Amino acid sequence: MNLKRNLNIIILILIIILPLITFLMISYFMYIPTPLKIIHVNPSTEASRLPPPKHLVQLILNPFAVMLGGNFSKVPLELRALELAYIPSNLRYIIDRFIQLMNDVSNHLDSADKLMDNAEELIGVGRGVEAKPLLMEASMELASANLTCRELRMALGELTRSFNIPYYDVYLKLNELDNLINNMYRRMMSLLDRIEGQGKLIETSISIDAEPKTSWTGGRITVRGILYASSEPLPNRNVTVIVEGLKTFKAITCGDGSFETKIDLPYIYKPTITIQAKYTPMGIDSEKYKPSISNKVEINLMYIEPKIKIIQIPETVLPGKTFEIKGNIISAEQIPYGEIKVSWINQAFNVKLGDDGFFEATLYTPGEIPDGRYFLTVEAPASSVFAPAKEALSVMVKRMPISLSIDIPSSTLAGLSTTISGSFKAGEEYFNATVKAYFAGNEYTVESSGSFTITLSIPITIPSGYQTVKLYITPRNPWISEATYEKNILVVNPLTIIASIAITVILTIKTFRGRLITTKQTMEAERIVEYGRGGEVRRVEVEFTPKEYRWLIDLYWEAVEIVSKMTGIAMEPHMTMREYLSATASKLGKLSWCFETLTSAAERALYSTKIPEPIISKAKDALEDLRRGA
Image (cartoon, one colour):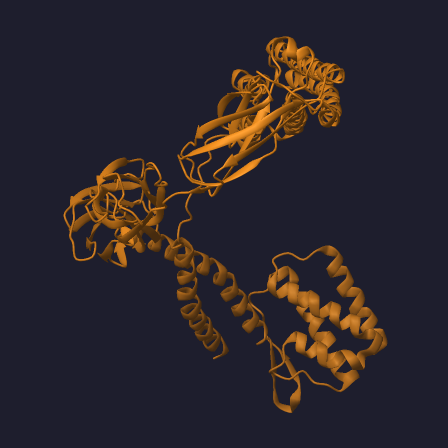
């Protein structure tokens, strides 16, 4: 009965565990595949590869060319290209040091050049005393540039060696840079000489006034002034009148050193302009008199400022389509021109104005530009007393989104084919588009005018699991955006499921086969003891014990009789050998090891085909000790 009951339990366990294992194995195969990251090169190899020498030399020489041309402000822009170039990380510090030194040299030279320009301007108007501190400061900048240039020479030596580039071209540029610094030194010394020479010359002074102080732009004003040398008038000398630092007019002093000239103002659209007069000695005067510059006279200008107002423009425009704008020009007086300029995404054209100043234009948005904000500009030209006008607005360019309706099955069988279908439109408009589908490494392409159907072939070799279907919809019309769609399809491959179930069954049979044999032997072993009348123990022949070890069973039964008498605990029918050992161990005390040794030897006789000799010898000794203890 016990055997039958245990077999039923085992079968029940198999019924529960087998589907569970099968489900787990199917889940293992039915994983969602992770997209592969394709690495085309070995990163560790690429990280140490030097950039092409010719390319690197060009990036190094470009900043030198700009600096030697005197355009110091553009040097950082050229160095930026070198900074963004690929450089191995272990050599990056060399390039960074070169960039830092080049920036330092250009900054020092730029400061020195500007200081000398300001000093020369002051010297030109006889203010050499004010120019001298500027030249001293320029001298410090040139000295710093010279020291930095020496560091740059050493840094370039290390750079050329580390990157295996020819040193000759770089060497020539360094020599040219040294020459540039020397030329700037010579210029500074020349300016200092001019200051020293002016110390021996006679001071001159010039003062002016102008009328009227308020004028329309482009109008005429009268400038009067007087030129002195040591409080004495200077007759018959040329004087230059400068308007807003730009336009110049000539005048000649009279016998009393005075001069007067009428000036037609240029068309300048600023509220206030300044006028000055300048005297520059010429010929033998340059060896006798200092140059001078007059006081500044401010003239207030009047002009008309038209305003451009755009009254109609869409908030969003579509690439590849046209849109309209409308607006007008508001002016206090009738505008003298009939056209304005409209600029939109690299397009500029003239638009005619109506009699009332209104305008309208139809503009085209190129189809290839990406979505985003772009500026639309409307400009009116300057004309006489009418100042120029400009209005700029930011316009959003955005494609129409696609609404999709896609029907993709949730599951399919490997080795068959499945169909996906769908439709698409932008707003209420159906349109032509190319639809591409990617599934299981295959590409499918169809041309569609709003709806499509694609038949996917499912390879028989594909494992069970989720596979991704990717759809790409590319409209032919540029004003409609592209769309993508993804969905996972459960692919069931019967071959992989059958294989997984077969493996599970085989593993289960192998696992439980030994346990069934062991259970049967245990149940037989538990039947070796029966009780007769009077409670006496009867021995039962154990047929499955090898004949050469049956005497160990007899030793065990003798030990049971001794233990039963010593402890007063009889071996009940329901007790196993181990249960009886546990029940008597506490009362046997020190002799419990003897009974445990005999129990272990009997179990080996029942369940093993061979028993080691030390165990047999130990069992005999244990029985002898048990007998003596009794």
